[in-house]
Amino acid sequence: MLRLFSDGNTGLVFIIKGQLKIKNEEGDDRALPSIFVYGQLDSYRDINSSADTEILIVVFHPYGFFRLSGLPADEVKGQIIDAHLLCGNHIRSLADNLKAITSYTQSILTIEAYFAELFERPANNSNQLGRVVQTIVQIKGQTTVKGLINLTGHSERKLERLFQASIGLSPGKYLQIVRLHHFLSIVRSKQVLESLTMVGLESGYYDQAHLIHHFKQTTGMTPTQYLLSANPLTVNLLTVN
Image 1 (cartoon, rainbow, N blue to C red):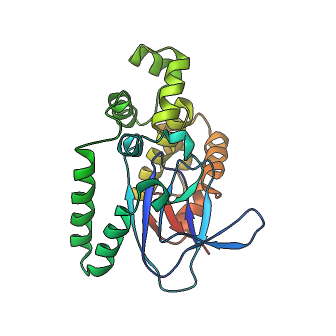
Image 2: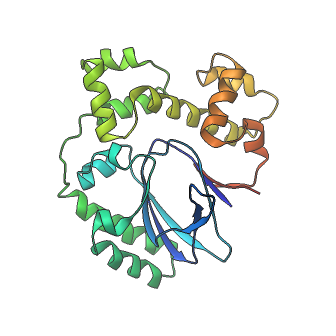
């Protein structure tokens, strides 16, 4: 079982070998497409595989998929979509090439070359939030929506529209996710259990209850359970029993 939760980015997943399944609203397992895009996640998703499975994940910068595709990010929010519907048949050729490659290094170079070429002619040249997102990451999400308004000079309504269209999240929600992942980066590097409150305060959480509530809402587990779980495969993808 794999648990995928939001890291503030959109991703593109190639299933190189095997199959992934996800439970639908009725509780039944549904096979995922061999190449799929996941939009900004509004809740964690549990994905499972009953056979040897190999995957490659391309993680875009928060506004990267919007620039590449021109598709408003809020239209794919919370969804897992067959990549062929969004990227066309050329994405299948890339997938076929990846399946023929035996070196992860070569796979990465092939993916980077493919997307570098696409970004030379992006569907949307607007990058109004690039500097803002960079600042948010640098300050580890420790500001407010009002602080972003002062930084950008935009009205609250315009800032909301820009974030929803480019990233797929509200400004406040994006700040929360960056703050949470800063907390995660600390606890993963230190593997601490006894000082979560202090790390939480350092990450901008005013008390432990606030931290645990937000953490569980995003990941489906407490910080302690996260640290005691199987090793994460990536920052926002971990194996669960």
